[in-house]
Image: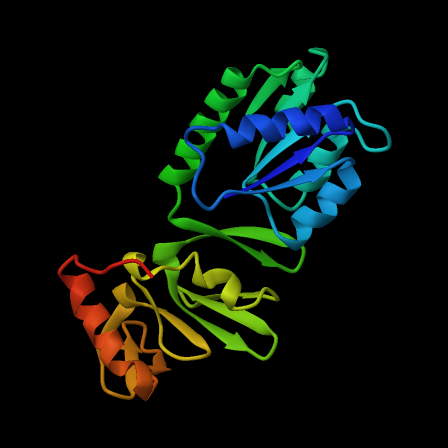
Length: 239
């Protein structure tokens, strides 16, 4: 999970960092990044989307509301929580679909409770991943993915219904999101296939129910066969 904290006051950044370090439900893969202005946050989120943004409202140059509006133009899914010393902007927070609005000084228990709720919400919808195509972020459900293929410096998602989605993000950016326990297997250097969409396979090739054929590397055939049958019997382990 990726969390961004944006506040022009270093003391607040340090306080929130301390609260996050004591968050009891903190996921093992938590990554946090801190920003002192909205423009820097917008650029960082565009390059690598965050799951949660803790955002001060009153900041020089771009306010928190303006920053959230910029982010919402291309990302409808990121969870935004406003942290502010004034309640007068509470109504404005609804326009950018904020998850919560917490007054300063931040009460640790209140922020942690808010994070608990958001974390549970994200987990319950964890079957979706965020894919950036151009300047737009898309939520792609895992069950929709037939396979993904690395093509030159791009990755193409082949989705059910003959749909495709192309991203400039590298293949490795998705390897820790598309896991074996969820049915995904890397069949070679350039492919990750969803086992749930497979109709048949040989030692050299996988055929999907859509008719698409995926090459199967000789070096990983045995591992793939074990993963395929293990998954059918509900015994597939995590990557």
